[in-house]
Image (cartoon, rainbow, N blue to C red; front, side, top):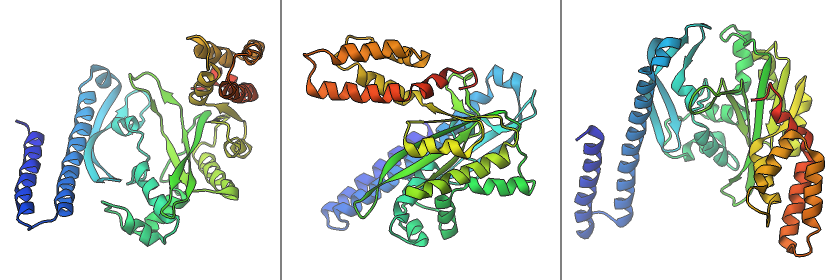
Length: 357
């Protein structure tokens, strides 16, 4: 029996012991549930920690790793998550050809550099900052080992903007990439006052590593916050300050997103920047356009859109919408897809450019 199995048995044993106390009135049902869930949470974090370390060990043993990357050190990574703090050991490598240093596991997990917090934890803090002071926001976040209100302020105003200062101080060396990628998205966040607001996320990276079985983003830095209205200018200015400092030689930038106005507006902040409609949303609207159509239509529309075959797309929509048997709801969906795909066709085609990853 391994240690994790034994730990789980211990959790169950404690639960059964406390259950007897429940019948004797020594603990309440709420206390029993709370204690059991706390023990499960602690056990779960240990499971995750051991699994992450095992993934790192497995990669370390691969022949291709030994050929390309030299082991330099084994270091501990500490991250604050919404379920508590985890600390796991992972290997520090040096690329034998380029001399670059990196943590393979960090890149696989898309962990932001210079941050002790996961993106999910930052989002949880942002929810609390909607109506509360910084210190209250951090105190309200469960299972939290970070208690500095300055830390919360850095979450809200972005860690990414600190990097230009580190470059200027010589603590980080600028990178020489000629092509850069920016992706932007937003999601609803439910606040404690029952209102819903958007949390915006922008991440800058150097493309996807497609040589590995599981693709991962190279050198990603995240900017996230509850920016509203004119605050978009602040968001994009912070991203630009990072790009300008970290990538002074960049000649081409691709900005990808779903076509929202605030995302497209970001292209004005970066020289030689092109907007690209991300393929996830293209696929979504191709499936919407294929409502009441034969199987395989969505895939055909997807290929036509990426190839810029405007006339074929127009003919499809014209034929489909002229069908007298089309229901009102289906017609509405197809028209919505038509507007979206044809209106963003130029941005869709850019996803097929050689430099775009």
